[in-house]
Image (cartoon, rainbow, N blue to C red; front, side, top):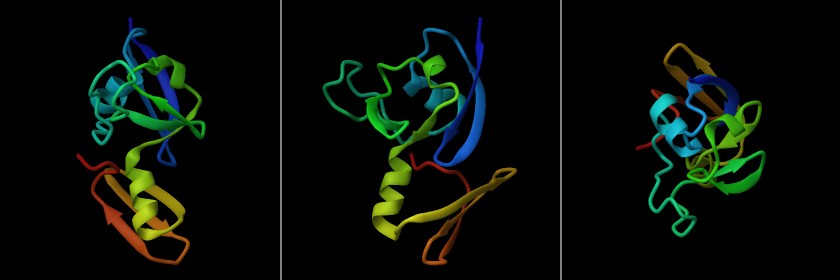
Length: 116
């Protein structure tokens, strides 16, 4: 039976439902459509599924989706975006539109929050 999960991903409140044995990697990809983190090895060897969970680097293939409920996650998208463009000031979502505002004042309108 699926369980409800509420969390903050890349600065946005998100929610979905997940089977108790589903990994966080699969929950992010399949339920939330965040495809930037990849599951490469399912054994901690490659790091392709790495995310920040409450500011701690974890392999999302080894964390259960239900364990992320009530927590904060940053995916590779946010880390790469910040490395390229600078510090984020605000992320807003309205319907399917996402607007990212940087501390510099630059604004980016994105059609989704994750790169494939």
